[in-house]
Image 1 (cartoon, one colour):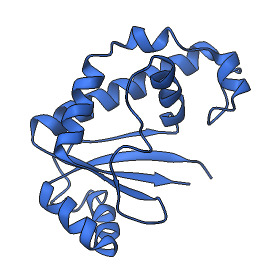
Image 2 (cartoon, rainbow, N blue to C red):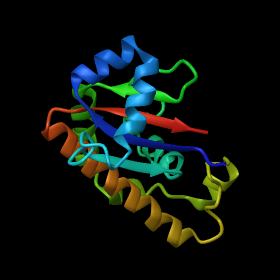
Image 3 (cartoon, rainbow, N blue to C red):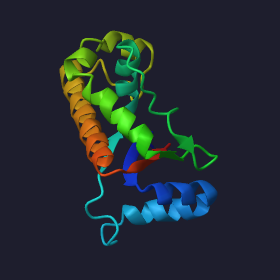
Image 4 (tube, rainbow, N blue to C red):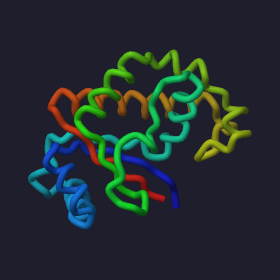
Length: 161
């Protein structure tokens, strides 16, 4: 079992309904990932997947005001589904675009990440490859936030554990 996060864009109306009807939200988000569903095509989405904790470590060390697990608002009380308003996604997009990858990469310390048990704690095995993996996840997150913000979307964030 792995601990992952992923995002799929959401309209303000969907987010409002999800906040009022969390059970509806679970089913709806599942349907968005069903690629036969006509509502899914063209919606920006991304999955930092297991890279989220490594990215969060880099954000924290670089003093970038992003908290992937605490920003947004709770939809499911069990902590598996969150909403991010269009304003939050637009702000995140601005913050991420203002933070070049090199600024984050300067704070990549595999030994410290291993010592702090940063999930998925594989940093010592192939540090260069893991840094590239984090870079790819970061670039995907920037692209997602930018595309969602340009279209006026917020987002659903799924946290699975």
